[in-house]
Length: 207
Image 1 (tube, rainbow, N blue to C red):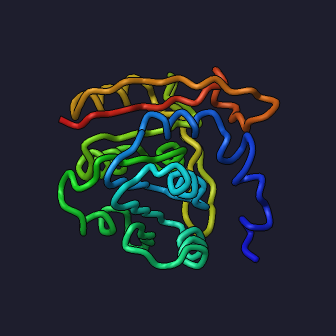
Image 2 (image 1 turned 45 degrees about the horizontal axis):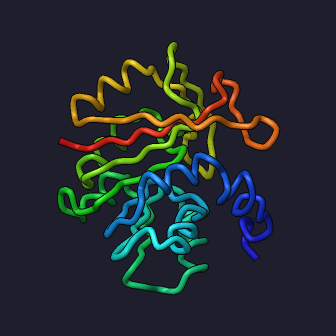
């Protein structure tokens, strides 16, 4: 039995499929043809998308952590409706197989703040999709704070990006709306850098 199967708390309840920012993000996504998820993790969002019928044609996940991709490929039978890609040679290399605007939506949940910077991932998402949905566990805010450790052999960041820097960057590449989802600290994990105890969802439409 895999780790995630032994710890169902990360799939169910307020830390899993019922997390308010996950529910809200999937509502914003709606029903689409093709969806790309950057940083699929243990597949909670994928499982919910399957259950909800979020994607009609294709779900594709790209993750730099081989543990997650191995888990998902062993858990789900092969299908032409979904694909899990290990980005062992980097995200850009993994994403290069897809043409521009191939996906209706690109989605990332608590991914950007766990990378050295947001630029590479945002560029990939906006290049490959008509609409980009990003959920921040640590919403952009001043001042910018960069923290790092190591997970599964990769640098693992817990960053709070500058709100002005992030919003200026995406505004040069499209239009965006911001959705705020309040958290209950007694039920949800709250990072000390998340001073407002909210998750922030950016909905970006590429130009």
